[in-house]
Image 1: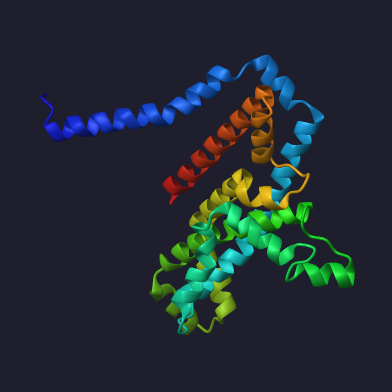
Image 2: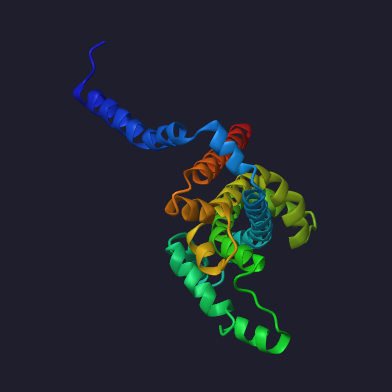
Length: 257
C-alpha cells in the first residue's frame, strides 16, 4: 500500500524521535560494563546513598500522598472564592526551576531563615543539610503532582454517588472515606507511584539543601564530573530500570481501570 506524504512525514518524525530518545539509553548500555558497574554499586558508600534515596523518597511520597489528597479533595468540593488562585499557588513547584525551589527552601528553613532561624535559636534544631532537608525538598517538588492526581480522581466520581451518600445521612468524612477514596483508588495509586519516581529522581532542589549528603542523582553528577564512570553508569542504569518498572506499574493500573 502506497503511503501518502502525510503518512511518510509521520513515519520520519517517529523514526527520528526514536533515534533521538533511544540514543542516550544505547550510549549508557554501551558505556556500562558488568565488572565495573556491579562492583561500584556494591561499594558500601554507594549502597548507603541508594538506601538514603529510597528512604527519603518513601517519606516524601507518604507525606505528599496525605497532603496532596487532602488538597485535591478541598479544591474539588470546596468552591470558595479565590480557589483557583490558591490551587495555582500550590501548583507552582511543578513549573519552578528545581534550583530556585531549593534556594527558597534554604531561605525559609536555613539556620538564619524565616522558619529555620527561630527553630535553631530556640530549640537548636537545624533542618538544612540533614536527611530532613532532603525529605522537605522532595516533598516540596512532588506534592503538587499528588494534588493534581487526587483532584483528577475525585472529579471522575459521579456527583450522583456523592449526593446519594449525603442523602443517606453520611457526613463529609464518611463520604470521603467510604465513597470517594475507594472509587478513586486506582488514580490515587498511580499518582503515588509517579510522585515516588519524581522524588527519587529529584536533583536540583535536593542539591541545594543536601550539604555533604548525597542522593542517587547527586552522586551521579558528582561521579560523572569527577570522571568515575563506573559509579555514574551503574547508578544511572539502576534509575533507568527503576523508572521503567514504575512506568510499567502505572500503565498496568491504568489498564485495570
